[in-house]
Image 1 (spheres, helix red, strand yellow):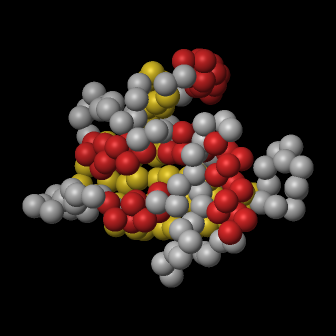
Image 2: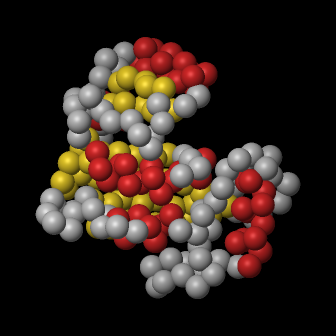
Length: 180
């Protein structure tokens, strides 16, 4: 089985976006150390940046939607820059709606109340609307939920919910970009 670096080298171009230059500097050092010539960091806003090629095959958000104030706009922009049939991948912390549809796990009142308050201290804002909005805007290919232990969290037995989402942009047509 090929390792991550080998798979990454199969891609024509990869852009890593962030608004924090210090984080991009760390990424630049790792990119250089790995010898990836097809990976470039860009200091930009995910709600507005467009790749030089104009359209993308894949857009990912890794634990970042919860830190983007207008995450709706970030998802809408990802839809805009994706080619028809392109993929969006998201992994992030989340809370479910009080009464989720049958595709999401139901969470306790304590989970839905505590985690948003805990993370908001670091300007990370959990939303019960991530998955429903992604599912509305894209054709859902995969949605999984799990829990993980938060390092240094005093209640090691209480785990933080997160999700993994993969969606596909619907084929171009008159109703390609459904409104909210």
